[in-house]
Image 1 (cartoon, rainbow over the protein chains, first blue to last red):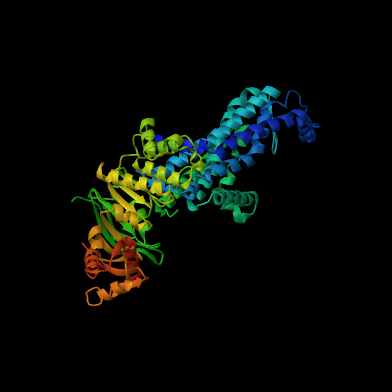
Image 2: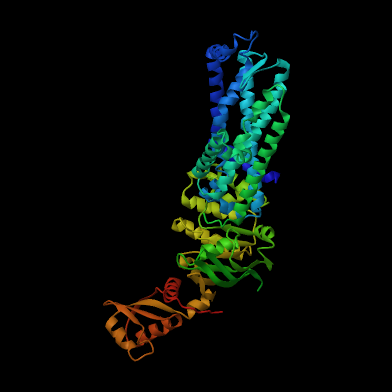
Length: 278
Length: 309
């Protein structure tokens, strides 16, 4: 299996589109950091304005950690696109290029092939998320230094500087899991079709549809919402709450892991049943 | 004779369309086995079933006496194939493609082995060029290299000379004969170039509309069949008259002033030549135009159902 995963990684990283994702992140992250360097204080003042009458804020709140949160929040929309381009091509790309024939007429089982491709695309996804982390931390800390982390959601939360690194570690780990679910959905769609665009469109259609269902507060959706990955993928933010809602995080992790397993299972089933006609 | 490939009662149905129906044939060790049929005859479907790309609706495929269903991995590690057209990872070089396919086949994918193969198919100088820069003919050669990568006992070739120039076609034919005669490989050769099969195959099967219409030894099949011969003679009129009272009176096909074309059995060609000479008709040349192609066309158009063993 290790050999097959290695071969799939070689294939992934030999494609320009896979490298472009890293280059895009490498361009966007410094861009966001630069924008924050120039205008971050105004944005932060604007965000804190409603609370300034009640609270007295002192210290370096526009620090590297806040920049990382900004970047992660901002890129949470874009990373799925970059990942889906690669994941959606994993199986359909072999069909489109006709290389399914070369692969599957060799002594490798279809299950082995699907699992090795799946592992490879998850590794790619985790590397991309790690790249976002390394780059945003590097640039953020270099330009803005450290300090307590202030997050504003339904309430203002201030995380002491000493607590921030391990919370980020967990948050990025969770982000890796969330993005892996997106990758596995695109991967699953790529087992159905023989073109690259189909899985990409299907993945985004699913994300949009599920996000709409998740965000509506109607009783009709109450039973569906817990089943949808969009209900859980933003739970990385919970790591910056005080206190951390571990129960909710654990539920989210299990729900996402279940999605990973189901998507892999469906992909294996589809490919095993498929007649290779391409 | 040791059977290497046994296909028994093979059926494949796509929804309501029957692509392959009760196909049976046996390929023996060392055979160069021709696999013929017009477009849509079910050749590719059969080959895909033989390489596990398509699941048969029913029937049995055995290689080396073992079932392809139960012993898939072992069997595939002993088979090399080109199926339809040579498709590769275009963004990788020939060397990297062969390395990946070598690893998948658990073959020797050392640089030395890869270079030997690329040299064999005349691509060594382009080993590190991306496959997307290759012509179709070059991809076809690379296809042959990947089929040989793991030193297989059986080589399944689907239109291996497609896209090659005449020189390249001859090279591939010579290579197939070399692999068969010198290396003892069993070759299963599907081709639409029937003269190619005629030249290199010892046994063949012809498929039409998903069914086997003839199977047997190429030489036997051709000897029993009619062929077309054009005689370049001093007078076609006299030649035609000389045939009137003979068993070949119905063999006339067409003529010009100095040529007469007949449909005859192959072993009658010499006797007719002798007859013309005895009747004082000069014979300048005898050009046999009967080939497997005519035989093939006659069989597939008549939808004959003949079995020759």
